[in-house]
Length: 230
Image 1 (cartoon, helix red, strand yellow):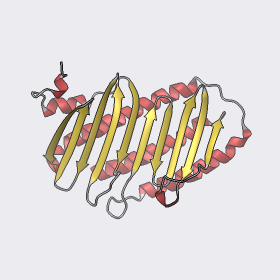
Image 2 (image 1 turned 30 degrees about the horizontal axis):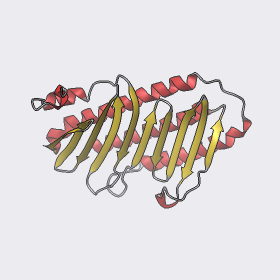
Image 3 (image 1 turned 180 degrees about the vertical axis):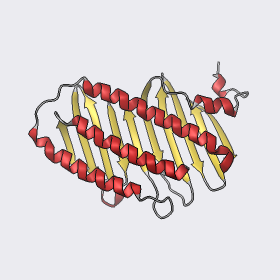
Image 4 (image 1 turned 45 degrees about the vertical axis):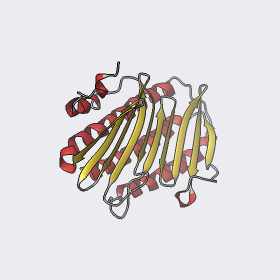
């Protein structure tokens, strides 16, 4: 039986309620914002698996209207609203995305806490590079106005790995068989092809610091995103 979520009788009110519910068990999450940026619009699409079910969301806002698509496995529903009327559901969908990220942050922290750090003096160079790179990126994000400059990023997240791509910076932290790997790219001309990583190293001591820098990027992105959707 098809879930009531996708029945013909399903109302917008129920739809909004569904996407305001906090996640129960997320196994993976991917989001892309302004992948193909257009002047005067904001686009966001994300997918996640919750308790074994694949969900998808895509929304595009313009000055006049909001188009959004929701999916559950292979069943898809599309809606269009005037910009003002659709503001509430955009907020619901964005809130669901925030819930998922918070949920996976908590699970990733729990997994990091299960590891035992080891002394590894060579990691200071990694931490300093990451500190400088994220500071530069956060300053750039804080200056985005949505007109001459546009917010653009991708996030891939599971309880064992997190990757964020924002402009020319690509950071990944992954737990593999009880060990933490850190990979970083600094793309030239914002192109992700034919690039060698700046770092692709095993982190034994300061993986919590690396994750904290990534969380700071999340916060900077969230503040910029809220200002564009307000």
